[in-house]
Length: 417
Image (cartoon, rainbow, N blue to C red):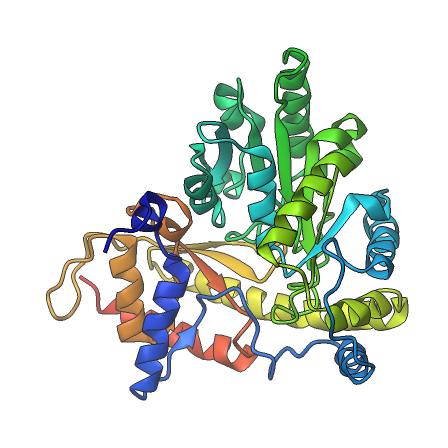
């Protein structure tokens, strides 16, 4: 049956594909440590008690009708206050858009700013930018990043591609790497964008920045920086992606917020409205109440981020121990988010059954089979198949789970020849 060209050519999520294969193995009775999905096991990391109780109360109060397309006013007011208090970012409620998590915000940013053929720049690896480029017909420029820069782009990497570009996609703390921009690096990128926009003629579309900071409240001793705070003259050109999904382990609650120039947010509001991608009203009401409760919020974040950091550090130290033992592995020290960047450089090696590992995907499925540990290759985030770096997500694992993985990985890798 004939379908659209988009439907014929659109690729599904590689992460979901791997996750489905893990779930099938689990249904067969195998106990796989699933480090693939950027989600949380709510039995390990539940949402704040006050938020859950607020959601229940809102439903009991019959807050079940359509919310406004841009989000209830009280939540937009409280998001404005939250951003001022925690990030020193000043926005009005009219510059805030609420949606069902961050995905509709990212998609609507692309739809509001990018025409078919427009140039979009993003780092590789990064989450889903390649798919949104495909959906919008953008000319995608994947800037290859490197471990010595913590897989984050520098201004020098972006500069050759910046002329005439419409959108620059950045994320910090970054998915999939869990790494964060240094102040000077982000400043140099901002200065590059300012200089490029100074060359644009009146009526010409400017260069915009989409800045995904959904993990900004989940950092480990490093300061989070954002473009407009560093360079206020960028205020009319930056759309931010944020929300509670990650910092409150609330991925299924579906409350995200974007903010930026009012004229762009207004266009995104119309797009999200046509998509019907607003957050449920009861959840909006409860979120507006909870993010005002400073003591409860800080208590939750302190405990939550401490536990996530302990799991990430344990996994990091385990890989550093394997490296010291001579295994061809490495890891980048965690900075933020729920991810650890791991290297397992075993392309060309043979399994005990005689199969040659020809790609990062082969390495991953060998580890699934032999070590009962599932990672996500950076090839799922736009990198080449021969890049032997992986994302490990700890949101669905206990500390004991993490500790038990290292001996299994050691044994599996020692069998390769």
